[in-house]
Length: 99
Length: 261
Image (cartoon, rainbow over all chains, first blue to last red; front, top):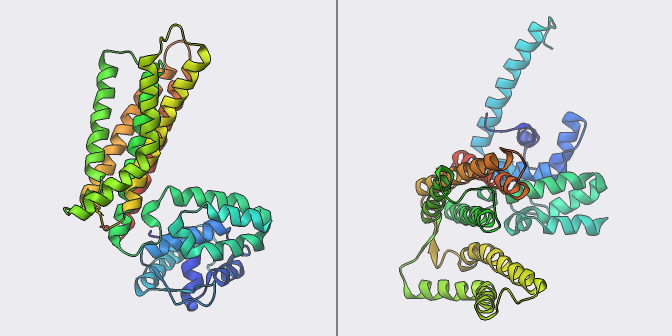
């Protein structure tokens, strides 16, 4: 795995297109029901940028949107496929039909 | 409330703050006081991972890791020196003494491996010297004053407050020196020094990790073994082991970064 929970959530939020920090957290809140703390969110963004999985775009005022790089898209897809396989196997073992 | 958020954001490293500061502040203001512990954890996390800070080039990341390596080495040396000078739990001879000498050798080797190299130009040398004088003038003057005072005053006849003040002055000089030496390298920038290449940097951080782990385990072991707990020794031992953890985190960062490989 190349990304932890917060980083995977950020990558998921960016899958639809570029967003700035506040919008990323709003998308995460829609996904999980709660926002990431500012330390976690911007720590995840810093790590993803250092791994070249996201890249900044030109900013609008104080906000600076970021987008997935092709490598980031690839990593996200791989992470999600792994998670889907694990979820599928776990649900089967519980005797629950995967949705 | 916004004052607290702004103050906390100011505690982030400059490179992080320039890149994300305004947005972190906005997010923290919106989330209120409940976000403060997360913000503090984020600040500590960033300071412990300089390889991850926003950078213009891989060389800039390597320079930051090199500076962190020197900081860790000086902190480890200062802690080891504290135990040795202040009546620590280590005996003056024997196997443990040999281990501590080995750790010191490893620290010096680590510093030699991670230290940025001055560029071979007169301009770079002058810049480096100027920054060294600027950063080390105060600790050097303080340390020299202490030495002059100690050699000029009869220790047996001097009052206890003077002895305490001299001791505090000595440790302040050493501590300031340990803080200021890494700041020389952050001050001079890329024009005067070149960071070591990635392989050498990794080897240097590994060496520093080995030195602090061996020293920390030895001092902690001796401090908790036997009849009574040696508080200073145990604290220093734990401190050295924490420095090992910092090195381990940096090695992991270097492994994960595509640009530093």
